[in-house]
Length: 65
Image 1 (cartoon, one colour):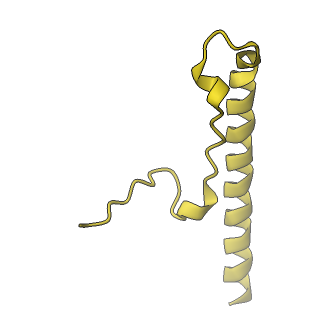
Image 2: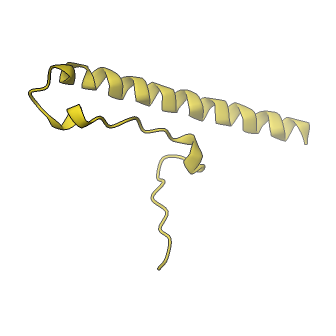
């Protein structure tokens, strides 16, 4: 069995959160489904902040070396 890299967005697979999937996300008539778009946007913003932090950390390492 071979490993396949499915990480297309970031070089470091540990830098991508992606979000939490809840059971209520699959029930379209659940009252909590109104906040799905907000949660997706929030998770995306978190991923972007992690990416910026990783880039800044890499720049600091290069400056030290």
